[in-house]
Image (cartoon, rainbow, N blue to C red; front, side, top):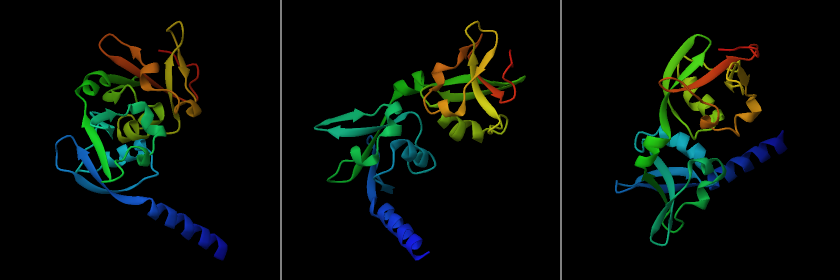
Length: 200
């Protein structure tokens, strides 16, 4: 028991040692001081910032790194594999966020989420991984009621039926790879695990 307690304390100490005060700079706004873990991925930090009223992170904001006199934006797809330590301005401990109007037009789109006969209109990020959509967006929508019994699905080659996407693949697939174009907007299909022969 003593050994386990010692290991736990050591792990906590390492986590605490990696937490530092960072100035978050969003374009020309007043910097916001936030305590962050340097070993945390940008995707996790994005999720935290979304719930921080002083930052109000959304899909129009990108993480950026200062190189010389230039600010270089990080691609949304790279956030999952990039840790904070790699992009923070080391001397003054500054994390840059920049606004992108292009992201609003191209990445965020309105689409219909369809489960059997139920259809729900939502705004989703085409570059988001399915695992992120399951965790951050669909679980928060009471009409969709996302749970482990529901899987993402895509149209088969003939366009008559649906092919389920197994949970293990959700981390590798982004939304735009599986959505279908409807008459008015894009459609994201969800199906129950037991409905492998479901067709629409």
